[in-house]
Length: 272
Ligand code: DGL
Image (cartoon, rainbow, N blue to C red; front, side, top):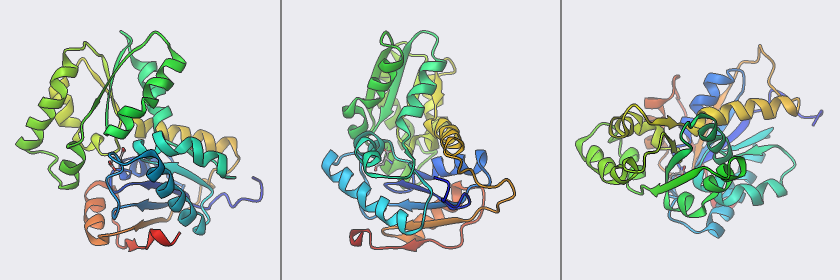
């Protein structure tokens, strides 16, 4: 690892805009780290696709990110973390992390009654990976998962505060409310953007766990362990790439990132 340029960027990828919630958290916690972000806007959603397809997509994205000389990779997508991380990490010689393990760790550390809910895409919930990690830490914990497939398109359409979103959320979450959970993992990168809606329905006794926060902490630890943290006076550079609809992505990104994004480049990911 010693020959790696410490000020090289971290590669962050997602199926679309959702991973920006993870990138945002990385910029807050690790302000000297540069980021190359890739959003697979041409092939979103990942949540309803098969494991084989998600592994193929993830391999292509990793190959693209490596052309940008990234020093580490964050899979900022729960579905891709659940389906592809184990495979990809065996194929790579740079550090890589996903969002599922950090999210699971945070939930188990914070629950008091050992009853944890998870909401995510169908792929993430059906993979049962969150449950596996949580049971790896505490086999006694009760874990209740619920897929919420309509949340992603509602977020993508910018309907963050909307009566339609409120109604959909109520339908999904009412059954979880009856389960007496005290922690709810927002197990999809889009869901932190619906935090206020979800929080209103679940009530103040349910702690909403945003895996993005814990992922940024894990990334900091991983970079430190590998001795590749950026210098403390390094000026970060943020680059954004997508596979389609670059302008739409850019205006969404500008609505949630704490700095202005002037350029988003479209690339043909199928070439990688
Ligand atoms: N980013 C995906 C995730 O966190 C959600 C969007 C999708 O289905 O592609 O699971």
